[in-house]
Amino acid sequence: MSLETLRSDYRLVSEMVRPGTRVLDVGCGDGELLAFLARHKQVDARGIEISREGVAACVAKGLAVIQGDADTDLADYPDDCFDYVILSQTIQATRNPKIVLEQMLRIGRNAIVSFPNFGHWRIRTHLMFNGRMPVTENLPDSWFDTPNIHFCTIRDFVALAEALQARIVRADALDAAGKPVGVKMPWWFWNLMGEQGIFWLARQRDSQ
Amino acid sequence: MVRKIEFSGRREQGSQRMNQRHHEADEPHSLVLRLGADEPLVLESGASLAPVQIAYQTYGTLNAERTNAILICHALTGDQHVANVHPVTGKAGWWISMVGPGKPIDTDRFFVICSNVIGGCMGSSGPASTNPETGEAFATGFPVLTISDMVRAQARLIDHLGIETLLAVVGGSMGGMQVLAWASLFPTRVFAAMPIASAAKHSAQNIAFHEVGRQAVMADPEWRRGRYQQEGARPVKGLAVARMAAHITYLSEPALQRKFGRKLQDREAPTFSFDADFQVESYLRHQGISFVERFDANSYLYLTRAMDYFDLAADNGGSLGAAFRNTRTRFCLVSFTSDWLFPTTDSRQIVHALNAAGASVSFVEIESDKGHDAFLLEEPNLFATTRGFLNAAATARGIPGGAT
Image 1 (spheres, helix red, strand yellow):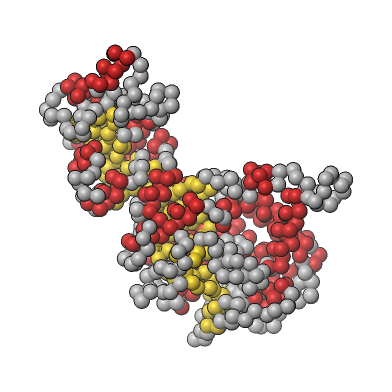
Image 2 (cartoon, helix red, strand yellow; image 1 turned 90 degrees about the vertical axis):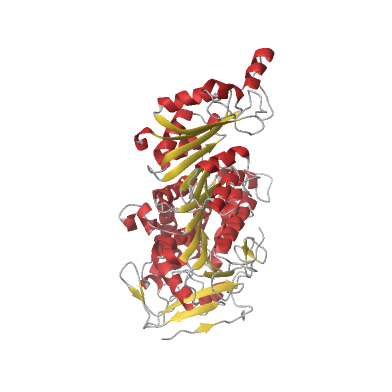
């Protein structure tokens, strides 16, 4: 897997990770991102994945992945044991996103979170004109059987980061084509135009 | 230094299985490493064992670099006959579905070793072995063993085979305990470790079940304080009951329900007697009877005791993490959802400790209603995980071949 063929959000995440570091990918799926980071960034790659199939696929790639649940199992890790803790397209499926994010910033010095932006204009117009919960290509589940129980917008996420006194080291928004929405734009613009947000957070106390 | 390897492929026809088993204890149908009086095995109890013999089987070919060796550690009632016909029962090897050419533990690619644990009765030194000082079986005069003692004996065998670092150590249940002890005692000699359906310590409930089994053996008048072999007695009833009780713990209620339910055995109605009316009773009786043909009652006492004593955290100042400090071994743990003897929480405790130690660890909980025994059965998810983990380890160690 080369950088060009890597999913665009993964590509951004991989840009944020320093080579040779210790990385935990929470909800790592079949290990695509972890395998890429292990190979191209020489990171010590670890993962947590809820599905047995996902873990088996990771193990076959030589990755160290534990079958587990982001909501309950992050508490098992000691403080500061990772340089980066990554949560890709998973925070909206956690029962308690705030606690998950707190735990990420406890066990890792940096947290990288990507999530679908519920403030995107398509979703807003869908809700406005149809009056029903949006079902889109990227979010295909009906409200009653979706694993995504905690949707948020980019501005909501910024507010949560502030509430947790996390420092936003870097933020990006990707449009529907996976292209970055222009840099140096105000949050309201990203919140409207970004289909997903990718945030790199660090602990406030580590920053100065 | 007296080191001899013997192999006898003969199988005595017609002799009774019990007698044959007694014969196996000293002269097994296996490769044998004999360590002389000048190479004693110092045991955890402080006792010293010499001479010692270790019976083992190998499959596949050791490569020139000696990097492709996988040690399999057997469970309580298992033995070294992993993937060949058993010399006493005539049945297929106990892990034939896992080990062989093209199997998850692929003997076309790996050199697979399995030795009978010391304390066992299939050719490694144990209570059924003849004490050279008396010319009689050791019986209860054999020193009490621990899991670490078994592992240190295996390490002698691995030395003898000229292997510095094993590609992997794999085992389920008591075998998994040995895997953990290997990784803790000899971290640089274990590249990858795979403890399946195991625990870092034997639980109070498990010690309790073992005590029931031992008391059943010792309550049998034919046990003769352990000297049944000398006195020509056969403590089959006690050992059969021990096996019946233990066998229940290896299964699960859904598995028993599915297999037997309340179905009656060869009859239309209950007989209002204590005959084996129910199929499950008949099944357990069969399990008990067939077990005594191939297993030694005193060995059962010694091996269950070794498991009871196992507590890896206690051996490391109370910290399980300390047992794996600075380890470079890669671990893969597996548990089964319906295993109540070595439940998932036991495996998770090990995963937790390995994480705390910064070790490379994978963990899978496999959905199965077959209870603890699932690790010995056709479980495609166990096969897939084992194959994936071992192939990845082999690739990391630069061993050619083996497309996944």
